[in-house]
Image (tube, rainbow over all chains, first blue to last red; front, side):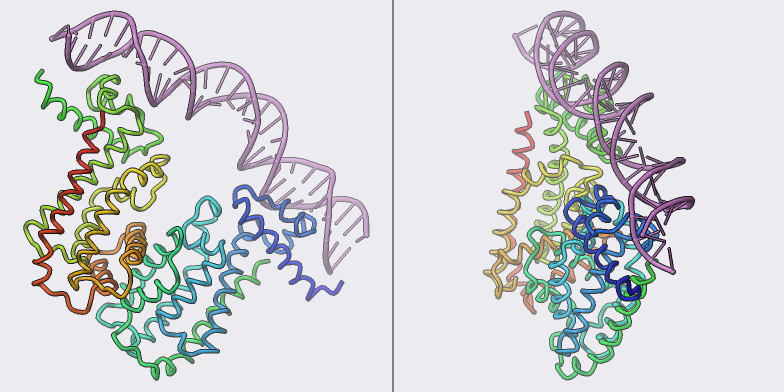
Length: 221
Length: 221
DNA sequence: GTTTGACCAAATTTCGAATTTGGTCATAAG
DNA sequence: CTTATGACCAAATTCGAAATTTGGTCAAAC
């Protein structure tokens, strides 16, 4: 068998199986053998890709995370105005809602993620948070974000709001988040011209972030 | 012993004991005997006040809830400008933060409240939510709240935001909530005159609510 | 070189016995 | 009489050791 391509394909198949089972039965109840069987590989093969169970399931979530970021990059590339904070939040929120496992991650769903949750925050946060802060600084420097409070504080509030929206059931409409973010974090007037001006740099930031995440995903084995 | 007064006193003592143990050991691990011993009464005496364990611990939370509402009423009575939504949210948030058990309730802290949590929402919500909506309608009718969205939607968003703030660790400063609420829910200008005008009616609403809660608390036995 | 499942130590589950607990009520105290 | 109590019991919980399952490895098969 041609190794190079099939290898990545097989990894995807395993991740698909793991995702499916994770969502259906939760982390605690999903065994490596279940995953291997569903992916139609031997148990040992799973360990050819990830060094242990935890890493496998973290990779499932990391993959979703990468996908969501990729969607974001695509969207911004197609429409620079999407870099507006309220718009970007809305898009990201809607995309997370479409992925139950990511939502479980953001909403601290212990039932499905179990002991994976603490490890998760230690895995995704560092780089992401950094890129996110840089993005906000960029907006602030261009009158696209309120500047009467330090970005550090805005981040805290934003995370609280996002968490609240994602943990609510049913989750409020994305448009409501956009509206809330616009009023709570943006200046009264948001300049279209300046949005276009910052879009390229913002795009760069997100592309970097997605590249880092993808690298971490591949560095699985 | 003089029954009338001592009875209420004893109930308070039992609730104090229950609160202390609930906070320290959590609902699952706190037994009625523990509570009785700490309150210096026989186990049977506890059942002279509440019909079962669950009702006792719900009463603990209900009492905190009443106290917080009472503080709110006092504050508004002393300063009518406190009826401003952002200010009132800030006060209420700060007061809840001071009471770990209430915070546990709002933040869905399963560890300390366990199986009490679902019952709790069924116990506090109905009346409170109603009074809260009425309060918001009152504000909206007086240009003290944005009117471009139905109050029903604002409630959903507010609850999400509040939940997010209370569940965050560490919880953001109350001033940050006030600021967020002001921007997300209030019109650009909030008239001091109109605040004073609606304060009496708002006060009435909250006094009614606190009376209802207090009644439910006394209807314990 | 690649994949696998038999294998094993460690973790989890099982399940009946032992203990604890929620709730009652006959009795004691006043 | 009223009020408070703790012994009492069924039900729930915990315990513990045996049985089972699982994560992870690796010698053998391919």
